[in-house]
Image 1 (cartoon, rainbow, N blue to C red):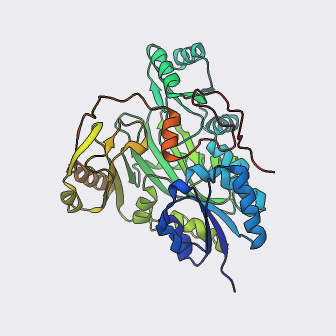
Image 2 (image 1 turned 90 degrees about the vertical axis):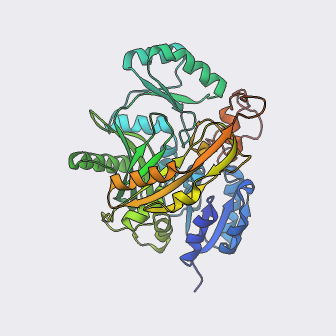
Image 3 (image 1 turned 90 degrees about the horizontal axis):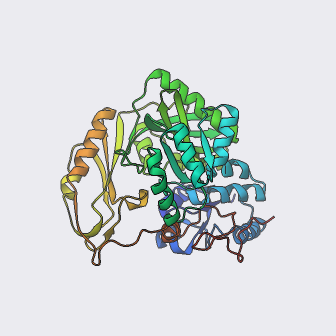
Length: 439
């Protein structure tokens, strides 16, 4: 009997290895720019193609499916979520629909749906003019300006008063943020809910606490989050209502919320497991690997127990440094030897450039630690991270011009919306090579 054939779109070698380890025949599609030779041994077929080129990848996958049927299409990466929803429908396979994955990728559409259903209403405005943005801030107080799509805090800016509107508007234009929205600033403790669904039934697996240090980029996470019973019940009900509203039927979801004075409010949600090594924290504490569990859906089983119990706590603390050129990195061995430390990963070395903290990709590494409780895990991760010193000096020639949104996306070889017509660097729609979904 031949092995079940699955398509895995995007992701690193470790992600693909988990699918192969379950005995699946893995067909892997990856962007040429992200190719890792270590993935080859885990693949029955490997195709290097831009999976965000929707017409090309759709035609290719149809041929693969006709040659030998594919049972499921999976991805564990944000950039491929909407594409995989489209491919799932195109092949007539079980899984989350194009509508579902699109809703979770399109922030204004998700907010409109939640407001319409009364699921934690939040005041918002999509694509306001300069004067409209000023009026919004005057009427509703502090606000958040952000792209209509994306993750990792890319292009997010907080406006605390009407006096900051002009500066925020000038920054938006310089950054090249053409598709944007504004929402009232939600104030309170931030957390995320890691859930798993099978056949439309939703299980809350873990709650993750967040630390941003007052900025928009997350500096740390901890599982489990500190939360009272009343808030826990409200958060659970809101997440289940959201997942039902968008029609999510299978797989993990990562839903970010803020516990406001008026109750929990959704920031955003994604049809994937959480990034930032959150899956590692969940696995350490709850014994559930959401990445592996996703692939087990192809075995037609629900791999996640209801309400998996917590065993202690686990936290991650991200490493940051002053912008400039790295001159030295020290304290790594001391951090690795600290109490409770599970993993240390420093992602910069002497000669590398550290940017100001614009989004998650600008962090310099991380430390993961365990503890008997949430407070202990957070303290251990923070103290171990503090032992690592990343020394920098100003770059030759002084500060570089601000990178645009297009620059940052080009660095990671991604587009925010693979179904939209591309734009030129000045924000105008391009007239050639339009990316449209194949019929």
